[in-house]
Image 1 (cartoon, chains in turn yellow, brown):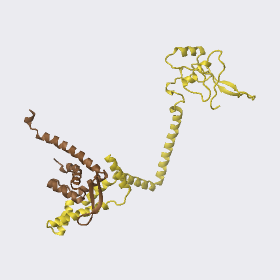
Image 2 (tube, one colour):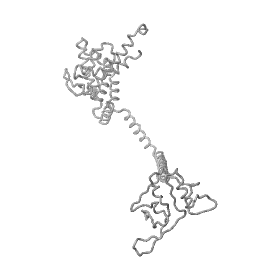
Image 3 (cartoon, rainbow over the protein chains, first blue to last red):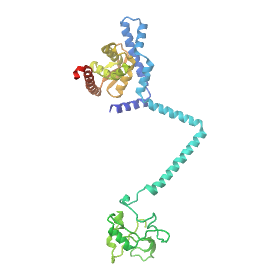
Image 4 (cartoon, rainbow over the protein chains, first blue to last red):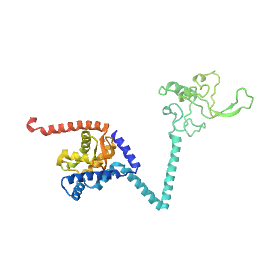
Amino acid sequence: MRPVRRFFRRLGAWATTEDRDERLLAEIEDHLAHQTAENERAGLSPAEARRQAVLKFGAVEATRERWREERGLPALETILQDIRYALRRLRMAPAFTTATLLVLAIGIGATTAIFTLVHAVLLKSLPVRDPGELYRLGRQARCWYWGGYTQSEEFSIVSYPLFTQLRDNTPGFTELAAFSAGQSTFGVRRAGKAERAETYPGEFVSGNYFAMFGVRAYAGRTLLPLDDRPGAPAAAMMSYRL
Amino acid sequence: MKDKTDVLQGTLALMVLKTLEVLGPLHGYGIARRIEQISGDALTVNQGTLYPVLLKLEQEGSIASEWGASENNRKARFYQLTRDGRKQLRAETVGWEQTTAIIGRFFAVKAQDLE
């Protein structure tokens, strides 16, 4: 507590430059007057009494120096002086200053831009319940990724029966969901409206798809395993953006 | 003992606090005089070194100061102990006594005492 209090007092003393060390000088003057009077009472001549008093007090300049160091924050003062000096020097060399500022600005700008990109692409978490526990199965990064099917590349596309087999027999996963390979399009029309159906892209997904991601519906309900049975009534979800 | 004054510098603050406790509000010269009287010639520090110590104690809130008139009718700065200062003095007195007691016991021990 005491050092904290002292720091704020020093900060205050440093901020208010008035009264500098007039107070100390007055105190020293009073001190010397007392000592001189004392010496005179002991029988010294006035001049000698004063001389002895000054000797006994010690170097006034050294005391003032110490006092000033204790009073404010000399370290802060020094830093400010250095900054002022640096600014003065920079103003004397405008070409150098401009070049330096440009280099710094470009450097900082480029770093910021690249980080923004990396942040968006790599670092930001997926908007699902537990991104850290999410895995995509397959042998390559592109697995289950594109509808095109070629002989030359491995796409890890599995049949629906194989998926159900994997889903039911891999206890290592809490949930295993699937989506259709390739893109499907759907004809969409508002309920009860006679207007022409619009074509929108869509995707078939397994009934546990939304439960696995931990994503809830904004309105209505998500698809459930209940919808994922032979003979179940057709069910669809619409994306918020649509 | 190469530098006696180093130790004394550290204890100067404690002497100031004790002096103010015993004598009440006092100006710088009074404090210096009192410390000199009590310590005799053993304490050979310049009186000037007292003032930075006073300032530090004041910044820490152990003492407070205000302008007043001294005996010879000059403007003088009077120092007095605050409540915090009293507390600090009590704590440091205990600490100091413990230290001196321990050191004293070490010096009192003779070789035959340990046999």
